Structures are given as C-alpha cells and as structure tokens.
Length: 450
Image 1 (tube, one colour):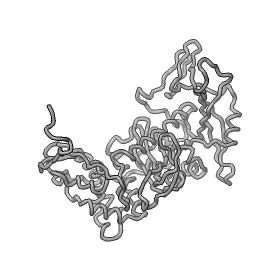
Image 2 (tube, one colour):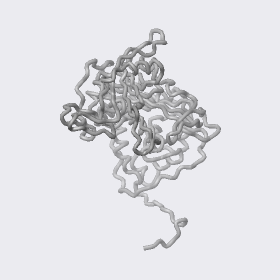
Image 3 (cartoon, rainbow, N blue to C red):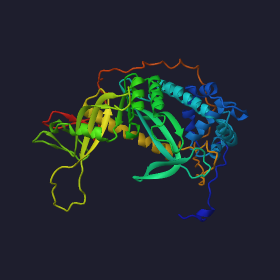
Image 4 (tube, rainbow, N blue to C red):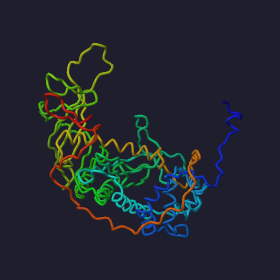
C-alpha cells in the first residue's frame, strides 16, 4: 500500500455532526457536576465587570477544555466541535472565556483557590482519591520557574532554575505548588500560587503550607500528616507554620557550620547501612553492604531568630563519594562521604522517616506534568506566546447519548477534621509489593527501599 498524495496535501476532516471527539469528558464532567463545581464557582467566584458574569458556566467550560487537551484560548473551541454541543449546554465561545479570564484580579484567583479546596474535599468523599488517608498522608511543597519569552509578559522576571542539571538564570514566572498524597495514592494538587519570576522559592510558602494542611484535613486526612520540602524552604516561618497547623514537618537542611558541627559529633558506630540502589545483602555478616548510611541526632535550629528556635531531629544520610577519575585498580586510602541532612519532627523511626523524605521527589513529576501535561495552560496571558501550539487532534468515538444527567441534590458539607494529628507513631499502612521493605537474611531487620 502507498499513499496517493504527498503528506503536504493530506489533512483530516471530521465533518460528521454525530461524532464526538472527546467522549471521555462525559464521566469527568459528570463527576465534577455531582461534586458541585458549577455551584461552587457561582457562589464564590465573582469577577467584576460585564465579562465576569455567569462564572458557573464559564469555569466549567475551562475545566472541560483543559481536560480535553486545550492549550490556548483558541483551542477551547473543541467544546463546540462535532456533536459536542449535544452532550452539554451552556458552552461559551473561546473569546468569551478569554475575556472572562482577563477580568480576574488577585482576589478572584483566591476565590478560585477556595473552589478548588471545597471541590477536592467533596471529590475525596465521592471517590477513592486518597486511600489510606485515615492513617498517613504527605504534603509536598515545591516551586518552579516557568520560562516565558514575551517581553511584555506580566509578572515575568529573572530567576534561577535547573535545565538538564545546570542552574541557569532565565526569564519567567515562579509558581508554588502543594500536593497531597499517601503511600497508596498518587499526589493531587491542593494549592497553587503564582509569583513574580524574581521571587524566592520560600516566598509565601508558610501561608501556602498552612492552607494545604487545612485542605488535607477537609479532604479526610485525619491521621498523621507530614509536610515535606527541600532546602529552599528551611526556615523558622515554614516549619513553625506547619507545626501550628497541626502537622509534622520534614525539610532538607541547608549546610552551614552549625549543621556540620552537629553531624561531626555523631559517633561512628551510630551509622546504620540502608538498602540503597547498589546495596547488597551479605549472608555471612548478616547485614547490608551499602554505599549509604543513616544516623540521627538532636538539633536546635533557627537560634538566631528570637523566640522561634525549634528543637527536633536531625536525620543524616551519607553516601560514598566515588572518584570516577581514579585509574582502574586504584583503591581508596580512606572513605569520603557526601552528607544529606533532614530536619524533622516526624514520629516515625529513623530509617522510615529518612526514606519517606526521599519520596518528596514525587512532587517533581507533578511539576513536570503541569509544564508539559494536559493542564499546561497559559490562558491568563495578556501577551500571546511566540510559538503556536499544535491544534488538538480529534478521535472518532461514538454517537452522543442524551444530555448529561442533572446533578443530584447536593450532599452534606465537608466535615471539618481535627486540627491536630496524633503525637504517637501510628502503624504504617499496608503498601504495595513494589514498595514493601525487604528483610536481610540473618540480620533480622528490614531496610526500606532506596
């Protein structure tokens, strides 16, 4: 078989009025309707001016468009393609939705954040969104420098970011995000905040952490709650806010002279090998032979802040620093270590708390999905980007059914959970086989996965 025309002369046209290009929106928007997305938007989101009216319908169109893969305001026309209008009513034109977003102020963005919190709490009751939340849940907070190119982009500024492992100074916007996850569930976004490109990572992180803890409690996370963050958030304001909200903190420590002195005071026999990526189990010695070891000591941080000093646990992981430039067969004279410290008041035992903090890296995948995934939207830009995204592809599905069912009677309001978590270490929930610890023969102790 061969094509009868060149690729430049071939294009796909979907002109059947009974075809639905994105039938997967039916269950998604039905769940959003039952959870009260439209009612919450109509009650809490009130942009000023003529373009801000009927927020309930317009917010629903934006959510449906983003779920369907729209990457710009013009792409929201996918909601009017083919038989899509037969599935739902109240679909607005892309120009109308663009004017609606441009009428937003900072206060309207906060109103939309309230809708997100209330909707997440209702979704958590209607669907198994966060299994195991009654026992243990994690809040991960991180920032991201989103690169932009327009010279008139509002809020853009120069900030540091890593591209392919290198720290670069780029022009962009700085986004702060908080996610909620459990050992059995993938993370969901609890709160976001957009700052100027020159903002530091920790700017506004204390209030965002406090908000994320309350959101997690409203979503049913009644058990132990641990907020994790990297060294950019190592501050008295952040850790104090997490404690005051009734959660535990686990923050990577910035290496300074005080921390280095505390690590140097750890006894040599206090280090415990862990099963790291290249660790092996020695059957004769009955222990793990690993390139990494973990130890713990007490530490008082932020002593220079009057009345804000915090005493908690300093968990240190050290990894052998191999000299890759050494000649073949050249042995080391003595072991050189690289140290990674965590400041935490977690109630879990040392090895488990250290392994849990390493899982904070899951938030990086969330940020990557937000950059290049289906929700990488740049709707609120007043300056159109230089590169035009590719139009969304259409897939032939089935003939549309009748209109979506009307939303049932609204359920009871989200129950407010206790503001404080248990101070005693709970039993860890059951985990999947891929993340379960392995036991070293003869050692009689289990080591968490590296």
